[in-house]
Length: 393
Ligand code: UDP
Ligand code: MG
Image 1: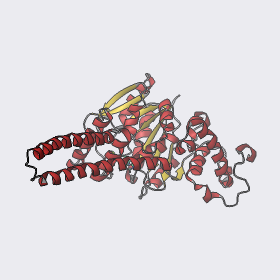
Image 2: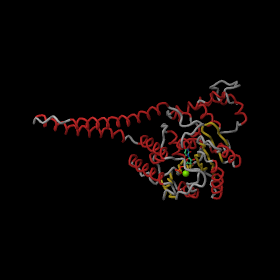
Image 3: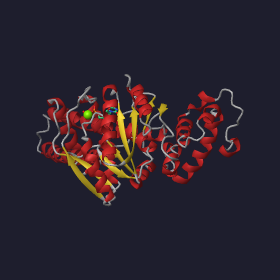
Image 4: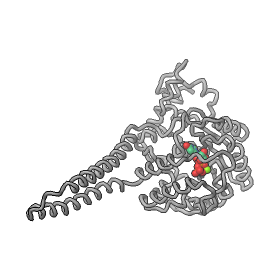
């Protein structure tokens, strides 16, 4: 039976974890869907991770990890994708605002051949006026820039393993999951749903975080703002040509004295355009800088409930995350992942022995090696970095 992975990013959601885990597992068991739940705590400052640990202790189909700090929902989604083993993966909020009873419908569509099943919002649910306005503005800008209708789209969607693997090979660090699933293509279907009310806690988005999200995503998906600079340049050239003609005509007709206002205005307008253009270009340079630095999307500090899914269900292609985070090609990524594994393993043997049968280890080590955490684990290791896994066993 095919495995369904459900990814639930969680940031300060301690009240929601147990309830969500219970609701989802009951639903999936009732529908006889083979599943795993992956909670990614995005650097929560409350008891979210201990709740995840507790849930994982009660149900072996639950796994989770915690980031070293808040890296954002996008990073949490990608961490979940990396961890997932299912033939199909659903991403949903862990506050149950994405109604779980849509899951069986998504699953049916996937079984019928859809590779991406988008969750389409029928209405936006109950929100504050400020949130509604800023979200409205955000989606209008985004839809314009990306040329896709983003208003009804959400992060609630099902992806086939094929699509997940493609997403994981994308080298970019600043991702916009919602639009990327459109961008990659594949056979797409959709299900519509009503956004539910949040039961516990409150929305994690403020007006400013939403605006920042808008600008970051707009620039990661479109170079239109850069072209805007060209348009502004052309407009001011046109404007100055007209003024040029006017000035020359005035000069020739002997009435060239009062030009002071024009000069001031011109300086202000051109100065304004220049600064705006520099700002836009600067923003893109900043984005290039971020990508070039090649830092990982997220750093994992803890994991729980691993090794509970049979090895046969693990897809080797999805385990090595190291290469992906370095943003290099796939073959190189694989090679490097192997080396990194060796390295991280060096300091890790005791822990490994205890969990040797654990197929998920490789993923964990890749992540750790990748984030540079192996330095922490060097104490008392007789094994040299780079030594192969087989030798040690
Ligand atoms: N979330 C996250 N990291 C963040 C902010 C939010 O993982 O920095 C998670 C959050 O725990 C929830 C989902 O993203 O599961 C959606 O967040 P929220 O409910 O606050 O957003 P809204 O539903 O109001 O759009
Ligand atoms: Mg929510």
